[in-house]
Length: 153
Image 1 (cartoon, rainbow, N blue to C red):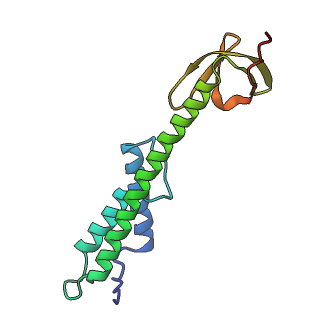
Image 2 (tube, rainbow, N blue to C red):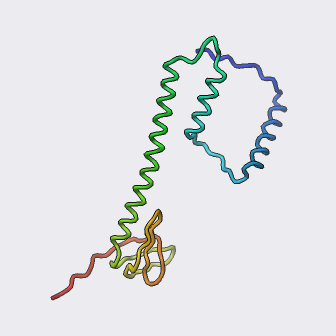
Image 3 (cartoon, rainbow, N blue to C red):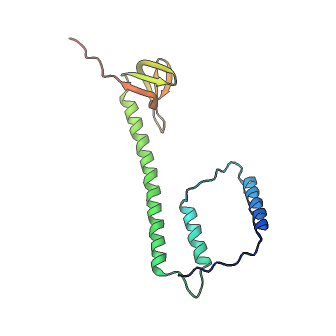
């Protein structure tokens, strides 16, 4: 497939001025937006629609190309779903780990401080916390969990 590149209508100076205007306008619309180097499914669909809109009617996109792009889109969709599922699974596992430490002696490193004590309570969720010595600490700060002391008869 031969790609025909149209001759630029704007000069380099006009193009730079237009790009600055667009950048400033976009910043006014959404000042908190951070530029990203990653393309998502919406970006992929926009590209596909743009390709279909501006394709040469005398040489439309080949079936193989279209099927390949749709397969890529499907794969992207599945990978996005899997990433969300793995994030949920990670949160569940972290919550279970924290819950299993309830009543056990733990060692916590939080910044420069080392704390040791018994886990009195556990919060669940995406970022579980443990209550040790009257203060909550992130589960990620727990460095050791000690086994229960055997009771002597």
